View 1 (cartoon, one colour):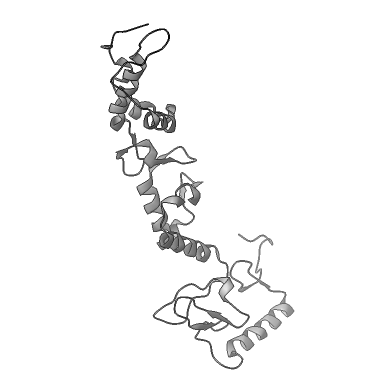
View 2 (cartoon, one colour):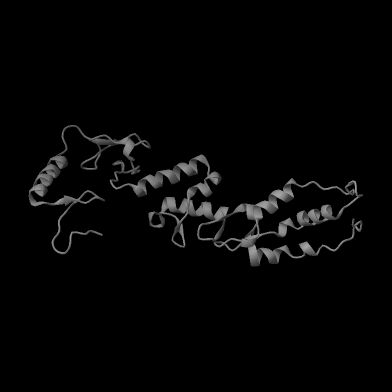
Length: 233
């Protein structure tokens, strides 16, 4: 058994260089779990064969160099600890701060929806735990709005929030944010009596059926083929 306690620590010489060149080859979670779970002692461990400190010294050296075990975020280019990063389907590594910030920007900018990296979808579940209840509600609300094919917004000018399908009836929509009601047909504040816009639209629908027009599957507006094939894009 090797009893020399002054062994060279060549195995842990330059972790920074390793992280920069071959981060994808290292099982970072395993390294972190192993080092965090380890306990160290200044005394040599005893076995039947005799005392040995080589393994303990090597693990202690790994723990001391752990701050150098960092990987580069593909977005901010900062070097962060692996446990604070996420590897996406496209193999890019994002720090959790950048990824969460991106999802919150998506919630405020429909042009960024759905969130992707190198044309690969980014699943919210990989960063969801980092969101507060309020932040998650904001993103989920935006997700409902961006995927809706029949959008109705609160008619109150000081609100104008999107009203999801569960808050609608056949004639009006109730805004959860301000409690105002919006007419489904004219999109103005709800009113008594049959909506004139509804009557005009029904006349259009009757005429469209006579002409063979069809409602668009996306927005519901009437369309007809002027020329070309029947395929729509």
